[in-house]
Image (cartoon, rainbow, N blue to C red; front, side, top):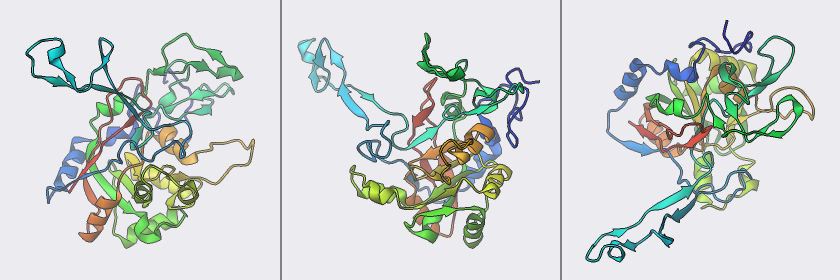
Amino acid sequence: MNPRWKRRPAGSTWGDFGPDDQRGRLNLLTREKVLQGVAEVREGLAFCLSWPLDFPGDAKLNARRHPPRLQPTSRDGVPNMNFPLARLHPGATDVISDDAAFIHLEYSTHWNSLAQLGQMFDADGDGKAEMVYYNGYRAGEHIVGPLDYRDGGERAVDAEPGARALGIENMATQCVQGRAVMIDLHKHYGNARKLVGYADLMEIMEKDRVVVEAGDFVCLRTGFDRLVLAMDRKPDLAVLDSCCAGLDGGDARLLDWITESGLVSLITDHHAELHSPRRRERERGARLPLHEHCVFKLGVHLGEHWLLSELADWLSQHARYRFLLTAPPLRLPGAVGSPVTPVGTV
């Protein structure tokens, strides 16, 4: 019996990779999968898959996330930028620049950790739902915030906030390198808003002869990246909120495919790639059912705001869909997300 839970969500992988697992489906990223990724490198071409980290611009796409802020470090109260070292050591010819950044970790191109989303779930089997994360890790004990909302209350917590389990550092030490598969939704739907269900996805994969195997990264190109970059840090919500394809989180067959495929992560160029039918107010259930299925149940990491279009176009022109992906996040203990500068190599 797992010490943290007596029952697990239906269809979940809790416990399958061990009672203390914090990596989820990344456990399927074996040496063989890395070698399969390396075998896709034939041209020696590398593609940067990150937006500039000050995109999309403003805080319109998410009011809680803001562009990064750079500032010089301080040397005895003086900004340490273009600082002539001769001021401290006469005769020195060195000029020093050093800076710091305040950055929202999920503002631009990023990974979500498995601590990013939990659910109210009765893991003890006593009829009482609690705040629980992947593999039964608990709010307040393993994922700690400045406020404790358990038991319906709100109180300050006298502890350092952060993910003491499931933090992004678990992903970083896995190194995140292996074979990736590109599914080009934009090729079939353009910039039109489209909920892509199981039948749609299977039709696209059959037409493009795309095969997903256990241990693969799956990238979904929608064209959202080029729209955002063309707006030059001034996102037009009227356009962005009504464009591009995304997976239908309400399609049970699609969720089953994600389970059965064995994919290790879902990656997209979209800011809200995992669409869902809107629930009625007070209707019980996940507002983000695909996030619930991937992050909470399966331990599948999500990548958002990636730059996929250039690589997707190249792959299509060369009748290919697989490539080597290298995309470790920051090794920042306790973080629930991380910026990333992924590289796709063909």
